[in-house]
Amino acid sequence: MSDTPDVEVLIERMGQELAAWLDRTARPDPAIVGIHTGGAWIAERLRDRFLPDAPLGTLDITFYRDDFEQIGLQPGVRPSELPFSVDGRHLVLVDDVLMTGRTIRAALNELFDYGRPASVTLVTLVDIESRELPIRADILGTSMKLATGQRIKLTGPEPLRLTLIHTAES
Image (cartoon, rainbow, N blue to C red):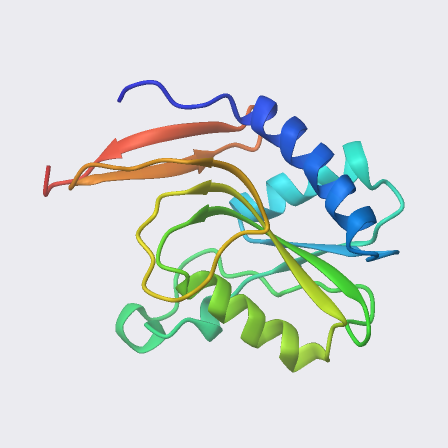
């Protein structure tokens, strides 16, 4: 499994699906929120290409992780930036890789600390089907099944690429 999908092709398809989803589910005037770092890169592309009038925000969920006490403060922690009110707003939450669901749970916790959105649509580039929590993407780029000792990482920002990483366990 040395080949990984083309990120720009996935984003193009996801953007079209997202626009149709928002229309079909009657979710007007959405705001887009990307989870640092990869989710923020994807969110910016989706907004620029498909929802240019949507406000864009970012979340750094470091302090909301359920393993924060074990991993501590990581280098590169950024403040979250939500330059719009969350209350009553339709949000599009974007992440790069959906694995256990714990990052999304942390992001939802943080979003609800800002207010009560009308809805949250989850958009994810890659689902590696390793779920520990009952969280699924509404819009998904692709699913990948990884072998033990493999991880997938989005690198960027220019160009965005998916990289397969072999860890020490492989």
